[in-house]
Amino acid sequence: MDETSRTPRGTMMLRTLAMPADTNPAGDIFGGWIMSQMDLGGAILAKELSRGRIVTVAVDGMSFHRPVSVGDVVCVYGECVHVGRTSLKVKVEVWVKKVTGEQIGDRFCVTEATFSYVAVGSDKRPRVIPRDGNAELQAVVAQLGQA
Ligand SMILES: CC(=O)SCCNC(=O)CCNC(=O)[C@H](O)C(C)(C)COP(=O)(O)OP(=O)(O)OC[C@H]1O[C@@H](n2cnc3c(N)ncnc32)[C@H](O)[C@@H]1OP(=O)(O)O
Image (cartoon, rainbow, N blue to C red):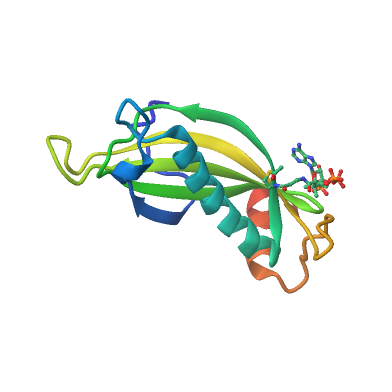
């Protein structure tokens, strides 16, 4: 589907402004900054669902659809698409909202990827993601049909 003709997937986890300090030599926003925002947004969701410390273990299917410009409002959406024993997968999308210029009001998806997070304990080893009493996780598991 054309990324401009749909709505964001998931919940908005982060909203920020693309600043001049985040540009590449061509003047567009640096892809590494966008990936960092994606990891932060996905990690917030993973921490909430797993109720504790997590680490990023993999990133799959990173696609940059359109450039981001200084002054764009950058919104990171996350949706949990898999719950494992100690790991979670979060589909992350970055959407831009134009707030100045000829495109004002336009919203479109600029980047997407799937981030894998592993819940870890204080020893930095994988820990089992708690399900009992974890209503938020239970809701996700039920929605995914993994119950
Ligand atoms: C290097 C960096 O600084 S990157 C940024 C921050 N990230 C990190 O520091 C993480 C570094 N990596 C690690 O510490 C380890 O690889 C750990 C703790 C994440 C995993 O340790 P492992 O011994 O591989 O764990 P183990 O094999 O038991 O797997 C644990 C879970 O991770 C999942 N997993 C492991 N590797 C991957 C991978 N590449 N992609 C997706 N899931 C993975 C497993 O499927 C398993 O999930 P499940 O329990 O839900 O079935």
